[in-house]
Length: 250
Length: 345
Image (cartoon, rainbow over all chains, first blue to last red; front, top):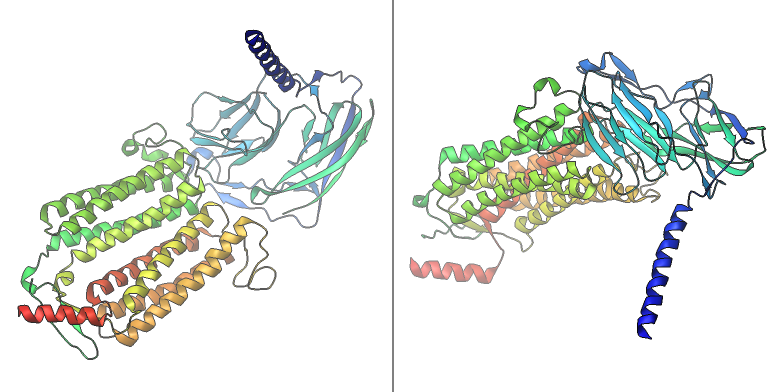
């Protein structure tokens, strides 16, 4: 009797463990058909004054091949803001998306990161390059415990591969060249965009539905005190939905 | 040990070491002075590392970009690596000085407690090196970085103490003067040193949690009052350092000065050191204000850190000197000591 009872309990525990694993997998849900997807399009506009550009002298950093660098905090052209990261924050629960196997590239060229802001799908590989003839360090700061790293990256070293296991805005900086930093928005889906030099962004193939759209833009002090704006939006099949953001610099 | 008694003005004295018991070794003292000076310079260089946010510019430790620290090519000392790598090399040099000092004290010093001070300083600097490495490998956690900053100050004070006790004047002090008041310069300077050290730890914590501008205005808070709106932990730690701590240190330093100039103005060394402490305090408050007004510009910020160390060092000097020169205000003890000495004579 007791043997059967123990066996039943064991079976129950195994089933629980399996179902827990399944539920973990179901966090990403089922694959979706985005052929009927709509488009979210908009412009990021700056309200109020733009922070004065900050210039750093490269000085003795010969390998940078440039005399100075202008901080990329606020790139604003005719009131339109570049480098804002816009993504769907809520409304895509239990959807599954194919994770690209090809890596997203982040280059260190002339002592700046290119691109300055980029997006990644959770699990997508990231490849960091060093096109400079000088050394850098690649210092990732993440709010997730255990995800941060700080690695040496001398000139001529093979590309460095990495990936993220948690979503969020990640900061990468080079502590050798204090002005060098960039941001990677990691989200569990492909519905994100970075505003271009005209402030324009476009997210295509969005499944019809109601969503919360979020904008993130760094402040003059980096990711601290970043500008975050949200907007409710309803996307219809094969239609373009407008979502402009007006933000204030800080 | 012979005993001598002096009754200058309004003070009583009790016996100490005689002049024929001198153990002064000029080269040992000079070496200790050099070590203390280098410790101070190392604090300045460490301050530069934090001011430039260069602490992680060399990600590996104890190697530097895979090289042995001492063979890392100079052509690669670029950008912020210059500050971090220079800090590591100079710290190694200071570690070597303290190691040699410990052996010299063991060999030439006769007082066992001074020998122990030398070994204690060595232990401190080894632990300091390990903390420095740990904070790099753990990506500058505030607790480890603040401990590194605090221990650096402690090792500096220890080196200063060794320089003092190996000096010629230390042995020349053959009498102890009874303090005229119960709460005298000895106790005041001790409390002041503790408060200054705590203030430096709070400052280090503020610095390593990037809370230096959590209250971006000085002397008034952004709300126009003396007390800011406590919207974050950074505001609290900033307020503790820039307002509460600064006020306490000022109050205690001036109270100590008042006692010194009232009762001990004839002690030239004590008076000069007290004047220096007051001058440095004025410079320090000015540098702190400039640090805020310039949004933590590198030069005033680093000078502020160094001046803090200088104030701690000066007050440590005052404290050690006071405890060496003066005896506690205790009528019973004076009578007893004098009676014993008188009986021996």
